[in-house]
Length: 373
Image (cartoon, rainbow, N blue to C red; front, side, top):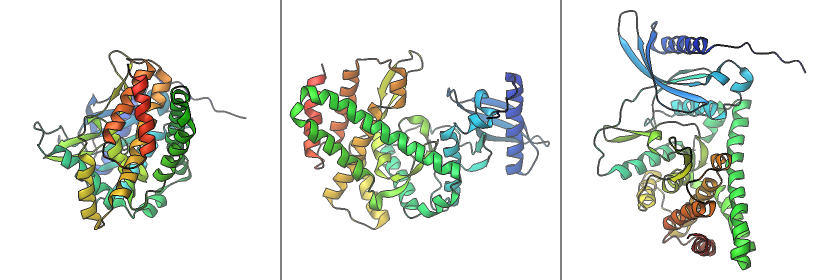
């Protein structure tokens, strides 16, 4: 097979090319020539960089935008670019959101893009004061996103290229693989500590996965990654969503589950894995439910609500337990058993009063009691 060797590029050439392309794309949106006068780095991602960019027109007018662009290792190589799946998915997400902006506009406007640079609106800094109704605002922004996109799946599908279809399937496969791997990991503990419930555990977790894939009225476009403050901004008392790298059509309540359960992440200073969540109140699902029913003009009974919410919470907890970062790093602040205990304890807190999967809740509660020191 004939391969074309990519020429080597210096860091200076990379930086110059990035700034040149940012200026070219921005000029296309603003309809005037511009040059980059300043860049402020906003993240530490090794694959996708984000920066606040100051631009200047020939008349001296200053403009601003946010630029996301591939790192030096990926920027010049078309084959490597195809591996930046979340970057391509974020571009797809913004393209879709542009089509429904008259329905839902709580996100930064898409300015321009190509396969290695994305330019979006700079929404500025967070409000200095946190409102008393913050979590209602969070619930509202998700209700508005989900109800605005509930019947827009065909419009989303129409945007998909062959590569987009592959990326969407890949992201879904990764999540479901993480779920099944976490189930297998937990089953090893259960086989030893609670052997009589081993087969019941396997069957019930399969039911969770089945229920998650039957969202019904909850089928909508989801952000699927609001797990810390970096993915949103508070502006004029309203929540705006950022970073749609994992945006997709799926079960709407996954956005509530990610908020409640959280994720594993690497602590930048100590390079260890820690479990983190936003301390979202356990009343958040009911706040969402009331507003969702009002917007959808649809009432859902307690049994079905509990089933939908529980399946999403359990799925999120399991995928958090077996995230690819967690498996790649294998460096933890505590033992693996303690880490499992932290996530499962949070899951059981979120499931308090939920009538769905009572056997599974009991099995997980029993397991936590035996592995947490």
